[in-house]
Image 1 (cartoon, rainbow, N blue to C red):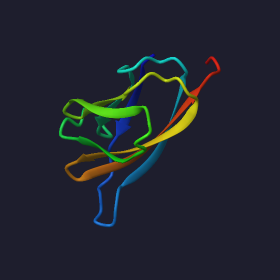
Image 2: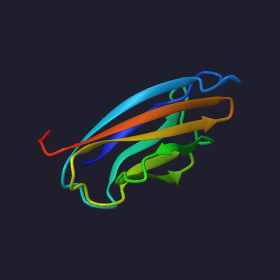
Image 3: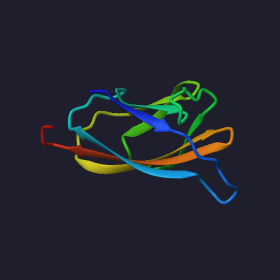
Image 4: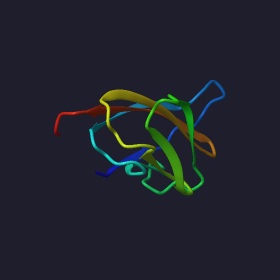
Length: 117
């Protein structure tokens, strides 16, 4: 299973906080094996140009979560399973995509379910 997420960056970030806040739902079935990429995060400008100077950072993460983020290359990362998905549940991961003059916060809600999709 592989799901690609595109992270658009496009508004100036003011000193008062992030320019955008978005929620993304990622439904997954039980049985996904450990160390498997389940989503890719890629930063693009409003014009659709890859934002290679973007840094992806996990801001909030449940330590019991079976998911983690790793950098692939500049402006790109992957959400992967740290262990096999053997229990249903809802997990939350908050990721910041920060580039010069732009910042976005993404709340990833990852739903693991025993039901087929």
